[in-house]
Length: 154
Length: 164
Image (cartoon, each protein chain N blue to C red):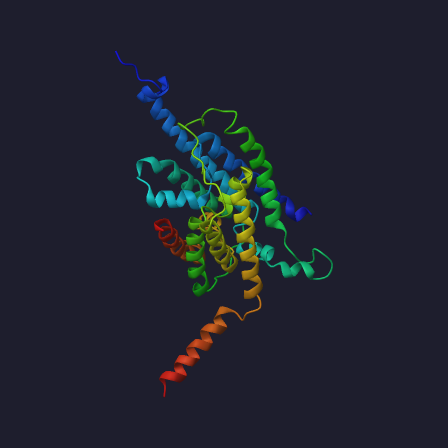
């Protein structure tokens, strides 16, 4: 159980941060919402968004270094790039992702957010289930390259 | 003389408005900082930890919960403990945020196709990478090329969805 105390503490900080933004600035801490706001709103009214993102990005770098968080191994770009696009697209289309729906939405007891969380969690679990049974991406890349090589060296 | 009807006196004073605007930025920055602290402390910025949570097959290795990593569940529990309490007090008790005119929160109702479709697409991307917008941005300047690539792909995705 001890290994979960940090998770719980981290979660409490996330909830606290969300409340600070709400009580202080009157806004939802949905990171996707804030980011799309920065991409689409006039600069003047978006200053608070930039401030939040600076804190998030800067803080993330600082605490990763300070807490000595292990850095991940390089994942294949053929997975990361489509995944990144899907995450961004889905988060904005669905009006929020983890920080939006799972924290703010559920915190406000929103039925919409409950449905969203259930749905994206389910989709993620199924995705992992499928990909964990598939060969790694490097295997696929090799197959395709071998195939192309065979076709073009006739 | 015609009096302005609803503008509070504080907002008519330019100096107080400027102080309020500065305070607003500091609070927003602080919120981002605390958010980042929570994300890193909880281990959510490590995709492998997120994947270990999503891989529910691990629950069935030996007796329950097997090798399953329930961290994300505890993160959500911790966050909701604060959020449920906090959001029941705010914005109901206060009339306005500390440094803004009004609360701006989503008023959308009903579960529609956009919401579900978006959630499915997000879930797939999340399941493929273990990153969400928050964790990817928190890890953006940690020197990992992974997160930079992810974010560079995420932003166009957001922009395209915003156009729909």
